[in-house]
Length: 482
Ligand code: HEM
Image (cartoon, rainbow, N blue to C red; front, side, top):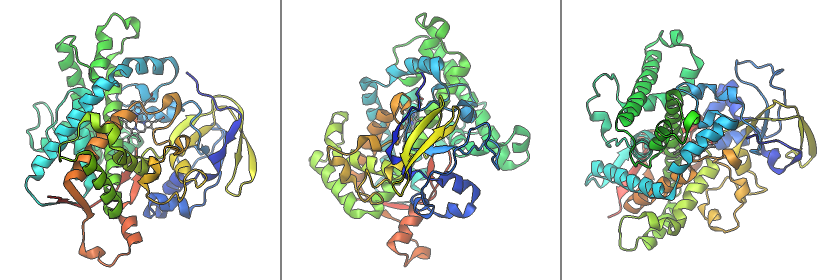
């Protein structure tokens, strides 16, 4: 499969931005929030360079064309760090990608989404159980304390049949391991950049580095055990993602195309990572926005109440009715698309016709091999498509004519996110259950007394770009509604 960049108009090219590179080279930009960086550094087309001739201050960082159209192939060498456990659907192209996609696709079926929903309800109820009868639950960081444990629990159970308990951290560490599965995956996802940037000998120099290396080794061991355990059970009628990956190594149907152990582990890793981090970060931004905008939270609560009029737990079949929950999630993803950049590479010499912010037409020659970075935020903040683009207005997604082509948090085209519906299913269940039961506010802290709304928003929504856009500290209060 090759997606091509051909001669065509890219109407939203004028809102592309140099944000991540600015972030990288100028540390002061880190103090600005994600959306502020868009305002502080005027969007423009910056550099177009053939990747073989680019001179960069930092190895492996190539300055290329940043644009807002997902039509191109992937620059595979830029995905190399994600191959640390083996090749996968995310890091491949062409026939290899088709093979992986065919093997995992059946796991993304309606039958499994019902299972995702049921596991989500079970895990959120587990969270409520630990909160117990407390009228008020205060968390120092919604990501670490609420949304990460929930989303990791869901991908482990629904994706891999491995049930984690809410207080898994407290359980004894399994024999032969030094840290828990949960801790290993937490470190692997948060320290991914450090692992990719430094060689083993370098990591071994510091305690932090050794911990990172240990987490990678431990995760590899856990994944290998998961595979061996399942293989020893023989072929069973499981329908989770994991079973689909493993079935390929049992089945004659796959023959020479069966996955090797490295491919199975590589794919498990990508699904574990892609399947929980994006969800956790997005939900953390969602709760933060609802705390900052109580009127929008009230609209959502009243809507949930109207759908679940008898106060019952939402069910999978309620999804089409929970339109306001979906609108809140989409509006969060529009403002805070966690995949900050989607990397592509031009498949051939081509020309793009675009206009800059002043509306001036420009013709850009794009040589084959040019690195292209698609900026979802570049499209999502474009006033040409979104009225009042910086405002948090979930209701815009209730308009049946909302501009679907200008909403690309999941990328677009054949390489779009395969887990989108998985996320929508778990996201709606988590959001609906929590808002139905708890009112969410920002934790009041004396050191921030007297801050303006804008300062508070800036503080709460502050994020940095790691594998995905990561909220830094979101201190919230969950107060029981009744
Ligand atoms: C808020 C939630 C999510 C967002 C914003 C998101 C976003 C994305 C984006 C932008 C891509 C394209 C990446 C690229 O081209 O480099 C992608 C691919 C992918 N996502 Fe997601 N994702 C989400 C949730 C999930 C979940 C829950 C899963 C798994 C259960 C998942 C699994 C994948 C996989 C396997 C790919 C690679 C697909 C392929 O190349 O064919 N994602 N996602």
